[in-house]
Image 1 (cartoon, rainbow, N blue to C red):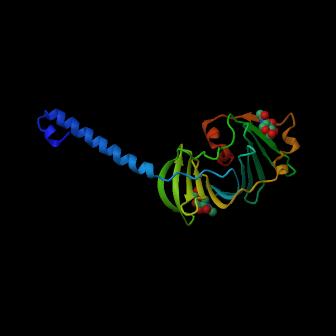
Image 2: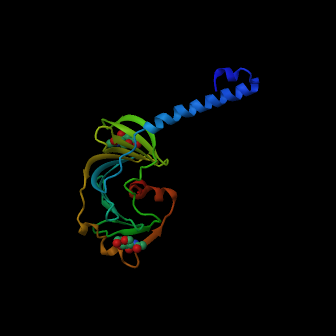
Image 3: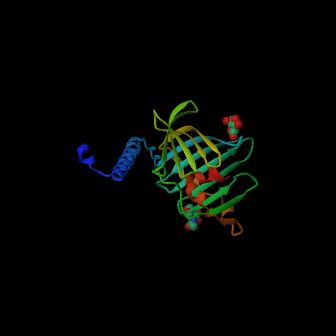
Length: 217
Ligand SMILES: *[C@@H]1O[C@H](CO)[C@@H](O)[C@H](O)[C@H]1NC(C)=O
Ligand SMILES: *[C@@H]1O[C@H](CO)[C@@H](O)[C@H](O)[C@H]1NC(C)=O
């Protein structure tokens, strides 16, 4: 079609064609940067991280052991000047929460899904770049439940914020580090028949996976 083709058209036809061109170009402008947007780096199959957590001013240090090949994930949570809570998650949906002190407390939860997959950030919405904790980061939002910050230079995670406002600052990120098998054994009092078990299948519990313990506790 040339511009000469447009001249004999009725005014209404021209308006429609004009609107069509406007919307087509808007669509074009929108789709181009999306294709160029950076994507989050998948998690390595195994890693160890030390996280400093801030939950509205309540601080914790978490030892995070992510172990996808063995279908398990561990959050060992040190509360400031308080106890240490073990949040051990299996890919069959069972999670144990226990202390190893004299209180011998343990509870477990049965979820419908297991731990997060290494590519759990796929499909996240890119929000641009921001400086966080002194690092220039690419930032994504996933399913309204987490905002995730990854170092532009090294592609390591730096920070994430849950929808609850709970924040994680990544202090170490040891790719390939694995916790020895014996440490993954929940204590015997988790298997007492009287032990408390609950089932929780709320959306965010399911979405959170490895991060769920950090999100709800
Ligand atoms: C923790 O977060 C609160 C806001 O929720 C902030 O006021 C406080 O400074 C933070 N504390 C640390 C140690 O970062
Ligand atoms: C899931 O796996 C763990 C570790 O092997 C086990 O203790 C737990 O009973 C299993 N849960 C189910 C529902 O099979």
